[in-house]
Image 1 (cartoon, rainbow, N blue to C red):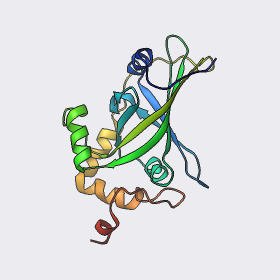
Image 2: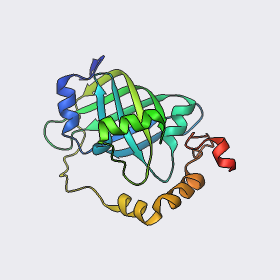
Image 3: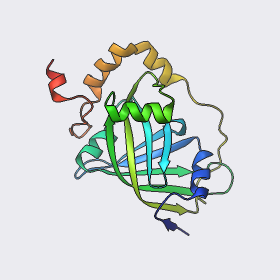
Image 4: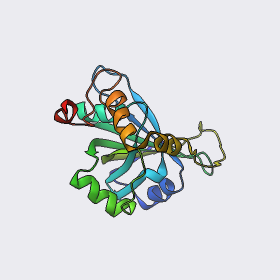
Length: 189
């Protein structure tokens, strides 16, 4: 049975800390719903009502476009081992631009100042509802390791190649919404 909370409780924080993956879900009016897997090593709980994750370059940038247009964001965790649980964090999200003062402060305070190659923005979620549910339908899986592919891909691209990729693939969503990744003024130069 689902239970709702106004904040992340200690039990939720402990559950989140044991997970290896989370999923983000976002949409804007008249767009496709986007669901993306993310590694939990990118996630930080700032307090009982806010979370951030360091977002790395992907084939699209749907979440940023949806946040710019609408703001709704859900983060979901599933227990793939141990007791069955699903935990969702609901709220309003926003993108924090790479190299902005806020981005650099969060990077320093929560990621030891270390930015992996391919980091493109930080996503912040201001949580208005935490919900747990049974998770009985979630299968059991054994975690083996993180994949090295994203790191290898980013290293092969280099910083200049990543920026070119962002300009080609990450400036608009699949539905044509702007992502705000790069200022329009920067795009002209």
